[in-house]
Length: 183
Image (cartoon, rainbow, N blue to C red):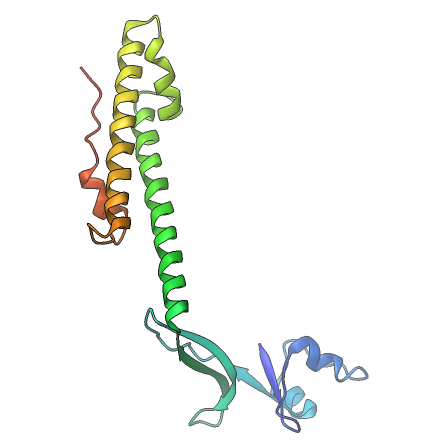
């Protein structure tokens, strides 16, 4: 919580308010009487306003609400074209990283259905001398390659503008190859 000093208008933390009164023992939590003694008012946290993808919001001091309470003030600012481009690039990088991570998780979860540690572990069995393991390992290699080939093709189409940017992994998952162990 923050506090506004009446005499100066400064906004301070509780520790700063207590430090300003080293010879006084202020109760914890601070009471209305203690705040009156310190000449301060509590600052209530007002919710930040909603912004669009091309705006930023930042704290901008404090203001009094209709009830006379001091509350956090906010300022909404439009981003510059460079800031918008940077935010979009960052957002696209985060989206891509999330999609890649979820795709890896999908492959690993599939491999775990046959008690492999993950898809990499399953792939190592492609050269196994045990026929069942070799069959599953071979399928794991094929499924892994097909999955990543499809995903990276989708991502390339997004990057080149041939395809709209997906909103998340759920938009891409139906296009990934079906995973089903061979009989």
